[in-house]
Image (cartoon, rainbow, N blue to C red; front, side, top):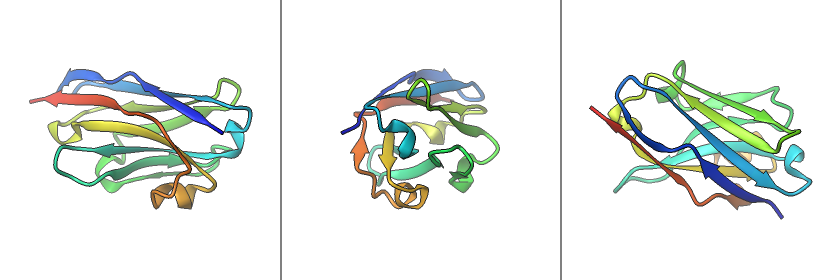
Length: 123
């Protein structure tokens, strides 16, 4: 069992930065691939970024490449999402997810999900 708690959301002006963090409970955190998703009002949940258990592989949706960076610290059971050059279209609730493989995470087939944290980017 893995419990995920996101933090770091907030209100920021366009062009600004935020760092989201996801804290995981459970001794098996290091065996899971991790990901970040987002869901804007009236839209479907969207994969944003993912990272393999060893950090050897990462994946990003095209719209955030070069602006967002995902990282993890298995010793601290955390996965972060550094978001730079934020745009109003990045406004959404951001969710952390844990899955067996990076591919399964990307497909939204994660076994565990956090409650989400709101990110609002003003123009």
